[in-house]
Length: 108
Image (cartoon, rainbow, N blue to C red; front, top):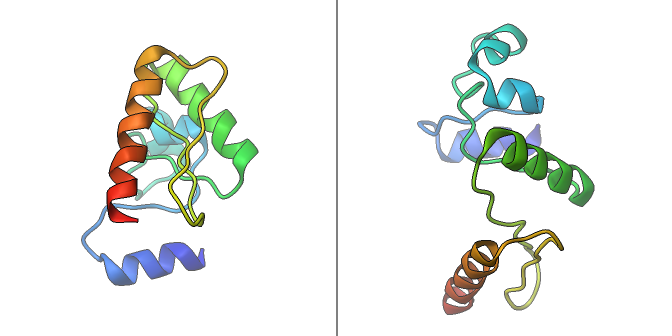
């Protein structure tokens, strides 16, 4: 919750929410029920998780069940840009992550 408070303080106009269950994040009907008053429930565009296993399972579910394009996960806190790919990734996934990693190297 501390990260959410910091983000809201820095970007007060950004539509962001705290923890949402995956179904509430992508389904308007479920989002209205589970997170009434949320500006993003049912309209998730980005998924951020605090642990690697939760991030991996969450984005894979959203990608496969929702027909979404998922790029990532992206690693942070390393001296040089490095990112990861799933064993089940497509050639498009490899290309997208390579482009992001190259862009990250320009700002590192």
